[in-house]
Amino acid sequence: MPKKRFSSQYSKPRSTVHPSLSSSASASNHNDAPPSVNELISSSRKSSAPAPSSSSTTIITPTLPPQLRQLLSQPETPAPRARDYRRRFDANGRRLPAGPAPPRSWLAGSRWAPSSLKKKSDERLLPADVGHLPGLLGDGGGRRLDGLCMRAMAQNWEFMREYERNNLADLPTRLRILLLSNIAVHGPEDGIGFEGLKHILMFPTAEDGASPDTSVESLNEGFYRLDLSGSVGRSVSFKQLAELLQKPEQPAEDPEAEISWEESISKSLSPPIPHLTHLSLSHPPQSISWPKLLAFTKNIPTLTHLSLAYWPVPSLTPNAKTAVMTSNIGRDIQYGGTNYYSHSLDNDFREASLVLHRLARSLYSLEYLDLSGCADWVRALRWTSGDDGSGGSLDWSSQWPRLLTLRVHSGILLHEESEYAEVVRYISGVEEAFAMEDMLAYHAKKGARAGRQIKWVDVEKDDWSVYGSFWKGTEAADKKRRSALDGLDRTFPPWRAANIHSGDEASTRLPVINPAWDED
Image (cartoon, rainbow, N blue to C red; front, side, top):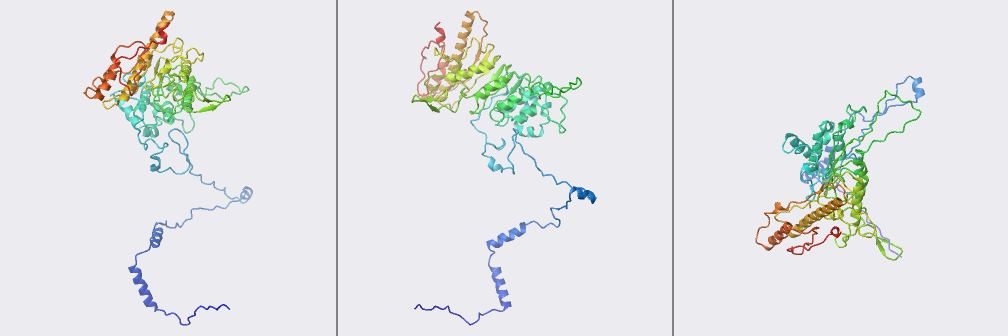
């Protein structure tokens, strides 16, 4: 049988200590021992807790049905207090998410951060001066007082946009045009912002809904130049820009309504900018869309001066360079019109030339076109489709007949520490400008032989003589760069196509290439 186990029981009572002795002992131990973590936490909570208020924050008011309240002659129930609901908007008019504002440390590396918190990128291209687009009256301000004031306003544009929004439209038209160019050069990295642009072009709406004394048409009657360099694609979209150039839609009229001859037209029939002739869309991000530009050009048929400096390669499907489609014939077909080797190896500028062809059809009255920094694809202006019947290339005999100036600077600034590859890129850009000049001269001669009235197109290119003092040393690297740059001073045959590559030496004389337009 299993043994029975019993727990030992002690009948002797526990020894107790006198209360006086125990209290003194505990007090001595309490004074000697440091406070525990829990005691510190509880004491801090007690010290930080708010004092209880004597009055209740929530007042409960008894209510009665409306019929009983009228019978008993009770007062009306007070309306509930309105919530403090204020929507926050950013500089572009977009509604910010609900809740408290995020910490500034979170926004330091975010693309949604305000421009005051963002770090300036060294790769960000900005216009060199306020006169990069023709049309400024005088010298564009310079060191005059109005120019210095506009520069100071552009450098503090976030403050001016917020606290002077009601006064910006009161500036004279000349100063508003100058202010836009200063913002493009000295302003924030994201540009002016659509809300800031509206503050410059339109009067603010009154709180009671009353319209201002001066209409938008009379305010912008002489506003002909719009400089949005660095803003389009960042803080101003083509859709927002079209709102300033489109006529407002009129509401449908009731045919049965009586017409009053004494009633004035309440809504304007003209766009906010009725006479725009100069527009700068230069220095956009690489994600800028050419199809959106083509759709936008229908709003500016009277444009005469346009700047597309530093735009990417013209393409209808820029994200489809490596995309292919599976066909029924058993081989993959390229989805887009341009792949990685179309320009470098195949010399195929078909898609880029097609986009420029559509642009020329929309902007028939163009007199000035700036394509600085576009040396990688400026060859598409003279690309011909050949005899395959595909078409799409520019027809210089009928398109852009009023063009007088074509600016094709390379967009590269050389310095003493420039590598040889960068010098080669600069030379290639200048050679492309030479080729463009020769092609336009050929079309001018061809039109003259046909009896058409042809205007000479002035091609503006880089002035390499400013680098005449560079690389005068005796080292091999200096001689190599100096020899390549001196090659631009030689006399070349027509169509000076660049044949210098980064790994090759600059030849003493480039090979003669007979252009296709000299065969007839």
